[in-house]
Length: 243
Image (cartoon, rainbow, N blue to C red):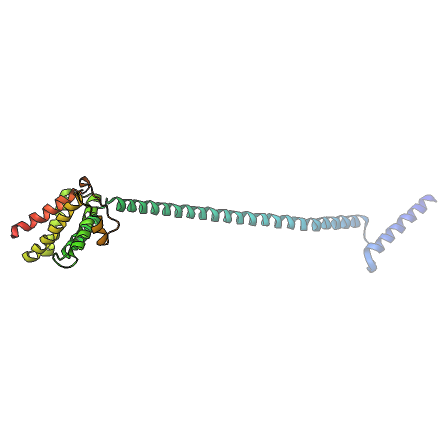
């Protein structure tokens, strides 16, 4: 009797399961099929559940790679910028050193070509003195002071000075003996004023002030401007053959 009831109960459960899983179509689903379907559903659910996590992990990895790449680009940009700044600083430093070097040479008169050009300008000034005319004594005092200042600062040796003066007179006057004699007369006035400057018996500062000279090296020490002797003797020697 119990066996019959148990059998009846099992058949009832199977029938109920068949109705639940088979739907209204009346299909019969075995216990093994039901278990398999359930396992498949669970597996699918787990797979679906894991998929977003996997996608999330992949996205996170891609994000990390992007951040890493961006960091590399920024680091490279900063390195390039720093290299550029260093190069600019080196160029500026090099430029500053060269500028300082040129300034030092100019200040100390170590550039021979610039010194010779300055000397030729001063020799031209003597040519415009026009001795014997109004104001010529003041012009002569100013020109002589400039030549004395030049001789006290120049680093040109006597031979270079002599060559510069000779070349100047040759180019300016050539065979013009009259013009050359006028130049010699003007330079004779310069020589006289030069000797007056180194003669301590008289104060020439008043004359220089009247001539508008305010920044000269007067009073002069002969040892500092003895190259003036070379200038004067060179002009006299150059003019002598034309007498």
